Length: 254
Image (cartoon, rainbow, N blue to C red):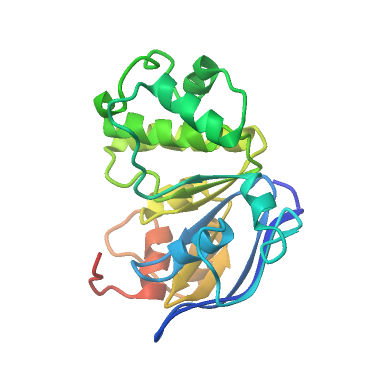
């Protein structure tokens, strides 16, 4: 991770009629880091990502991606990012090789399908139909499609939701591998262990505002220093304790 800011968000606001989904958020993402946006359902994290990804219009504020202004040149931003959506759907009866060809055509990119599939551990599934894949394999293929244009930044919105523990761990390894090649990764997740293991820094969002931003370890240390103790646990606290302490314990609607 370098000290160079590759994403800079200042005073970002998004209104939906009477609902203020994002309420003056400011943060930076450093080149080469894994940065996490954490928050309850409806906190504004996905809206924030979609604005940076040029998929949703902002109400006000500024967004710079690799020195490019969202206001002045959103198409240039699209050329340097890869986006995995929360609910990605593909033509179920197409083979993976056919889907990769389709996406490569959309990006006007030349790729080696076998190499791309090998990157995500699907080297033997090129002739398999998308509908034949397991949940974890579908997620890995979805990530492969975000890498076709060799992006500087990859956005992953809850990439391991619904996966079994082993598939989650496999995907964690893949995300670390993507970062090791120099790509900046921005993720949203509801899994605190995932954020603690993967992220260099996390921003916790509640009601459209960032209420804390630091490394997972620093957030945990700060909570312990405040006098917090977990009952009947070997360790005094973890990132999940930080999250719940900051955002509350009530049930949230999906």
